Image 1 (tube, rainbow, N blue to C red):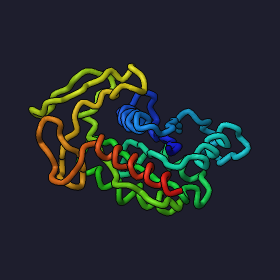
Image 2 (tube, helix red, strand yellow):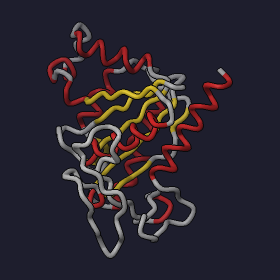
Image 3 (tube, rainbow, N blue to C red):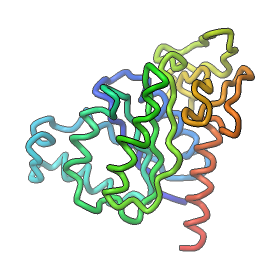
Image 4 (cartoon, rainbow, N blue to C red):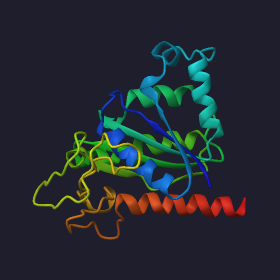
Length: 220
């Protein structure tokens, strides 16, 4: 199976982006992949800002990217783009650091308009870093993600499987519902029955990414 590195670009230690990223990571791990996490906020700020490649923590992070077969890139959306924390890390990667790698981008945000950040902000950067394949991006509206755990019911939509975010990597990490906010662009299926035509839910996207990784491993 593949070695997958989940990169979190949130500046917050407790974030909806982390909840979503953990959910995807748990799904991939359950399918047999070797999954680990890199929280960019935990890297030394001075080393990141000054591209100090002598820093052992930064060198170790870059090595983890180099060793991974695939990456899940997760970030909140700020000012119509992915976070500055993630941008700082992507800027210190070598020019073709993602060559030969499969990428699954996941964003969280507070308005459906932020879905455009997937294709107009994040995808071009990932492609410029040489990624072999960038999977369909995924946007999860933050109102349907709970960092406290439990079940939320928003706009008459029944949430299913609300899990305490403190329960560890095997939990579903508090994703309480995903809603098709703007049809195909958002790419989220409501668990309560409101479905964006032709769009799979978050789990189906993760499963499709996993299946692609397994196919590539089989022919390698």
